[in-house]
Length: 299
Image (cartoon, rainbow, N blue to C red):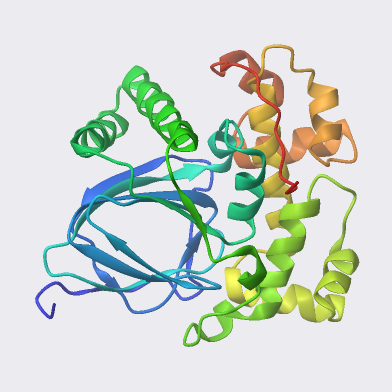
């Protein structure tokens, strides 16, 4: 393991480019500290094993396992086999919210659970390798195909055995050793935002849910994630709005309201800042997938 080297996350652990798809196929480095990124991570273990410390639990992934977890909570690859090869991607929330998954899965993932399935085969190794190649090709059509095929593969999980870990009763646990980034306060904050970002919430509401003072909530969240509470809420709202805009009958004003933005002007401003274009342009350029009910609240 000494020859492999280590990965040093940036000081605040935040990985940028929240709306960009990032694919990988590699022998990873052990992480000296947790990191986080505002995308859902998909891992497929081609060979060997990998051990992760998540915000509320630990996971051991074996060869052939495919896993899905919300990267917006601190996580750390802290041990692995010498022969580990893994592949997968960081999936922007715009694509995650398009997924046709069982009703409770999106909610559990956004609250820190890990989905893992052993129902994979050699085709997954070949497909992930191709999607990585397509996403990095510079060809827009190949990049779109990589996303669409990856989404379909994730959606097929519902037809095979899978597990959501830890059990719902244990999701409040934290992993010892992740320092301030695994603070139960940050976990409670992320849980509340995941459940309520489409509502009219502010720092006072978020702090109340975490049972702390609003100023302390803002400080500890910024220190732990590198983002302000407002930026995080807006990112969640924007990603949800992008998914709605990709539906055939999308109305920009209705999408703005349904995503939690208080006004069309606020929606347009935030959308341009993060996505680099207007909601109307995004709707025009987006690829439409079959409609599906978007739910975050567990049943």
